[in-house]
Image (cartoon, rainbow, N blue to C red; front, side, top):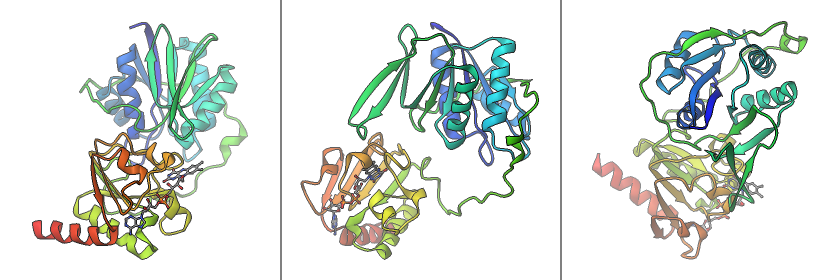
Length: 322
Ligand SMILES: Cc1cc2nc3c(=O)[nH]c(=O)nc-3n(C[C@H](O)[C@H](O)[C@H](O)COP(=O)(O)OP(=O)(O)OC[C@H]3O[C@@H](n4cnc5c(N)ncnc54)[C@H](O)[C@@H]3O)c2cc1C
């Protein structure tokens, strides 16, 4: 391995480190001989156990932010760490809202560039990153030319999640120093969207509906099929824009990236902007009345038919199965 040291910003979610953070730790382990995580929140010990399971040996803890947005304090802490313990070869961050906020601020503090929207990282005598462009129809490769550390913001589901079962990472307190007044704005309350099944990004089965459903009420067919299969309900942007379902359901370039074992696209044409968010699924099933719909080009199984007839039949069959 040519890379000595990789730092991963491991973002705490509601109950544990986010899945994207763990994906980054999994990939970092394959690229560098030493992987450290940088995290924050009230429970550093729990984060250290989790980060250790995914290959980090050290967890730099920025501490409890008491509701402050992480952008300023975490970027400041990482910059201070670079000054005190030396720079890693590369710093990986999830391309989440907070991850991108930290990346931008860190770039300004360290005067180093950021590569964003990354879906692949390899060591080719230095970090080389992959970025989908033109709705995912082409991939461009990029590398840092200047002195490191390079800052890389990576999209969810770019890498497989692989725990090593390693020991807890050693917790080291990260220096935050005096924080500017901007951290005095705090999150007073946050709401977690109600859902009964698995999260869309983590579900093993995703059933998505598109404009072919015909009307908003028929989305219940998607929800019922997803529920019977123990999966999550997704959507194309067309029906999100039409106000049939919330944006949190959207799969695609400007929505979520999913990689389930089974993806069922119902009444979805297969625009490149939709496919970029689901084409990594292991098995793709498409139901569309148009045999020439582009979605059939990437489908493993295709049903040419009216989704409003096929789904009720599928629901009845699943209920019969018990
Ligand atoms: C910058 C940009 C970003 C975008 N980001 C996204 C994104 O993140 N996600 C996304 O999904 N889109 C995205 N889009 C929009 C995308 O280009 C498409 O417009 C959208 O995906 C189309 O949604 P759809 O397939 O539901 O609708 P349509 O393209 O209208 O397709 C409907 C399909 O349903 C079929 N159909 C009709 N009736 C039936 C029936 N009764 N039974 C079975 N099939 C039927 C039709 O044959 C057709 O194939 C983006 C576009 C842009 C420009």
